[in-house]
Amino acid sequence: LICEMGLGIKPRKPPVLIVLPLALIDEWKSNLEQRVQPMLKVCVYHDGKLNGKVTTTDYTVEELENYDVVLTTYTVLRNQFDRAGIIANPDTKANEVACKVQAEYRVAMTGTPLLNEYTDVHGLLKFLRIEPWDRLRIFKDYFLSKRTAKNTHARVLSEIRTTLLAATLLAISMRLKITDLFDGVAVVQFEPPDEYIVDHDLDEEQTIFQTKLKHIWDSEERRLVELLEKDGLWSSSLHPHEVFPAITNAKLTAVHVECARAGYGEVGDADVIEDPGARRSEAQAEAHRGHQGNHVRGHAKKKRQAFRDKMKNGGWGSPRMKEFLRIVKRFRRSRKAGKMIIFSEYLCTLDVAEAALEAEGCEVLRFDGWSSQADRERALALFEDGHNGYDFLLMTSRSGGLGLNLAIAKGVFHLTPCWNPVLTAQCTARAVRPGQDQKVQVWHFIVSESLERYIREVANVKKLKANRILDP
Image (cartoon, rainbow, N blue to C red; front, side, top):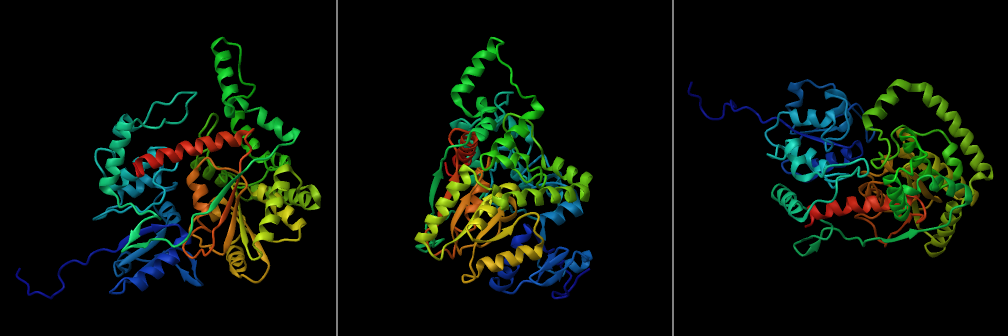
């Protein structure tokens, strides 16, 4: 068969599939359509509304082939291919499914290649098919130390192994940092924030919750316990199944002792605990949500309303809330037009902060997993309006920590420390970003004589691991 050129026999290249968080879809669509020439045909493959327009997944394969780019979300990937978490975790079905997608080339774009452990990097190498590190057994042999009952984290790699992993990443990645220059011009035009650690005393009842775990967060107590264990003279008063609740309660009560008795919140809201004690995976959280359904949700709403009523009737007082309000008042005196974002993993701690702020006559907005999409959009619109008095936006870390541009904020509070330093940095970056015209102030509440000190130590080790392989 001899054909003249121009008959269009050459098969059309299939579209590029880009998987994104929902919050970033609109921004990517706008930039692809406006900044790429010739203009691309972009399809949003998602059931819902985007910028007021209805979007759908009701496309045939032939219809999708008419587009240059198909944008979809991790939720669609999860629901239409399998149930899972993020692809960086090699243990999830999403990673397995994403790795099986047939494509001419693969690109992974991330600002967080290492969240918790070196296995996060393996998840990306597996997706990109970088041999031999895409095989977990080989990757573990080279880059993971053996864990023990006392050491639940893989240790920081030796210099040689760090160099090997860093060289692998250097060979396959393009690194872009906020300090980089293009044609002599800085990539970003904003100043780094001023960050402060806020330490304060705890009351007697709060201290009790911390003392239960002192062998975890206090190094001297830990050494003493190890010596006593060798002689068979010490055993924990906590059953292994009680450790996870004790850790959660220690985090909650550092904000307000009543938070331990609140008894509501979204399953999976909190950071996964990977330190001594039980671990609840995202898969377990999903299963819990599926089995319990609306009954749990309705019961939780009643408990939450009772808790909020108690806080708003004057019950919000605690050492942390008093220190929080002191800083807020000082900040507002120094910056009359400064708006503030308050982050925490937990709904109940934000409910306490909301009651404290309202007691001072402040207008407060909420953005969390219990907010409808319409309520979220309304909250953002009111917060971004610089003349309406809504100066405080309370956000759960996982709901508001990604994809939002809140450069109008000049102050950021982290009410509870995260085990994952990347999540904290992502939350701070909602205000510290392009478009920010002032130096942002950031406050981290860390009580030194509490579990929070240990959480910060763990977070710093994770940060060290990431820095050594990304910027050796």
